[in-house]
Length: 279
Image 1 (cartoon, helix red, strand yellow):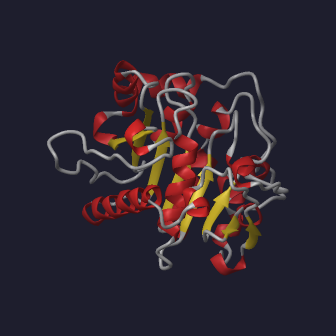
Image 2 (tube, one colour):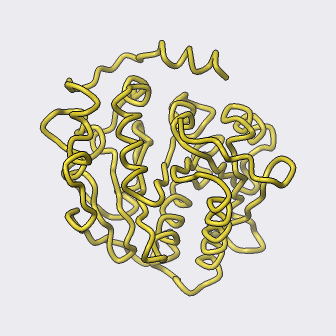
């Protein structure tokens, strides 16, 4: 894996980032009295076709499965220092972004937990669209010295989680994801929130998920029944590192219908391997 990371450090892609002065400037708002109650609130604009089960059927069985996943994640967290959780999948169209949204909503039901959903698919962001939101700024705008993180984070009602959208998509985000100032920003966000859920690109087609994985405490792999191949799951776990993967969430199982839900299993010997701190 170290050779993969070395290679990532050398890849800059063809894109360039807007200039920024320093890591400290990027997280300036978090260093100057960052307060959750000072963040702007927005209301999700969702229709009956929404795949967010906490909007469509908050008392139904699919919402309960996310609550079960929340319970198990909190139990793992009680044994290890986990605050930043990467959500990825082997390939596209396997349900990772829907799981990220629903898990954030489930986590935020516990009112004493401040939950941030970080949209980190910088190539093809979809969470703002799923929430029915058009937001003026996001993560990529924060690379400019005149935009602070505090102005780009929104509290999403009626769910109660916080949301840092991508903003403007990047064709080649490797430079941003491997930068010191992104690492510093993620560390500051982890200090400010109880959970940071990172919606990542798929792990196999692009290197972005590996860059994000090295900055997260743990990861969940999302697979789709009848679509995701076992070999792709194994390849994804190998890329992320087996000791980093908490488990697999299997969605679209026919006997439970088409909705996403939390089939969850540990890997390894049944004990939590996640005593490591975030990198």
